Length: 314
Image 1 (cartoon, rainbow, N blue to C red):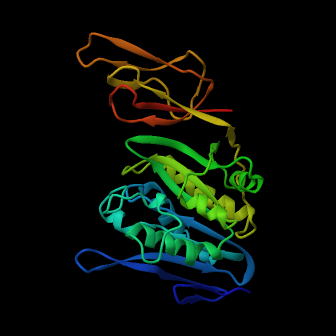
Image 2 (cartoon, rainbow, N blue to C red):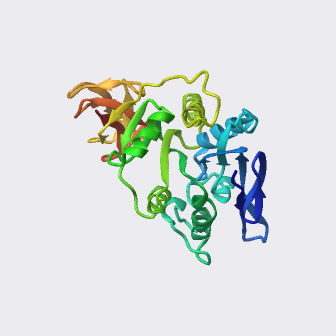
Image 3 (cartoon, one colour):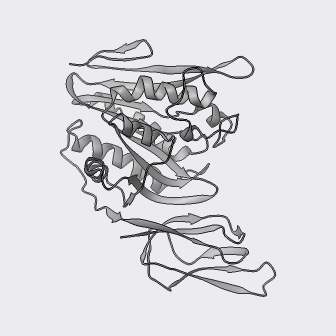
């Protein structure tokens, strides 16, 4: 049986409790914490991390983990441990902002520094206090800048263990995604830890499908790891997407799509349109590939070069 310790708080086998990963000072002198809920089963097993709110405006993951907490996983966990951090970036969440007060993107601050910027300190705490304890994690994100993502997981396809875990989570699509420099996922990989990135929904808007799919994925993963009773594992058929491409606006104006999220499109199929503001011109948007729509720009006003539709190819 394993005892977990985070920031001086000890969670013994068979126990579950809230704790603070650390606290951070605001300009007015107030302290803001990063709360985590730790569930430690009596029997040994994997340690799974669920995180959301890396960006303060990505609320679908936060709601997903809130609902996971409401389901009282602690009462049913058979082995291993689960660490749930509903809001990693509590300060940006307060401001409903993607960035930190100094303009930095927290997911480009890893591995961080103990005495660095605010983002570097948060990243350092995640690297030093959380990652050494875990075996696998799922980091919840949503689309930014009015991009609405259809639920999908991102991992590197040449890492077979990551692909296997992603399929155990189960999402409509699995996307081959390289690491980004100074990201949580890349720095976790340097420590030999697998972090899957779940993308779904749009910033500052709750999306029922994004939340439902994410919640079911968390439970399915824990069941497949024999951490929860799996008398009723719902199988999920995941489409594997090897590459993705963005269809961009060739003309400025008003944008509308004729397809829905998750739809399959074919080369040269008319799937959207851009019209000029005064009703004089109409520009059809044709698909350049065969694939599934996994991202849609929800802004009706676009400029030349703006991303319109994200298509994943099998």
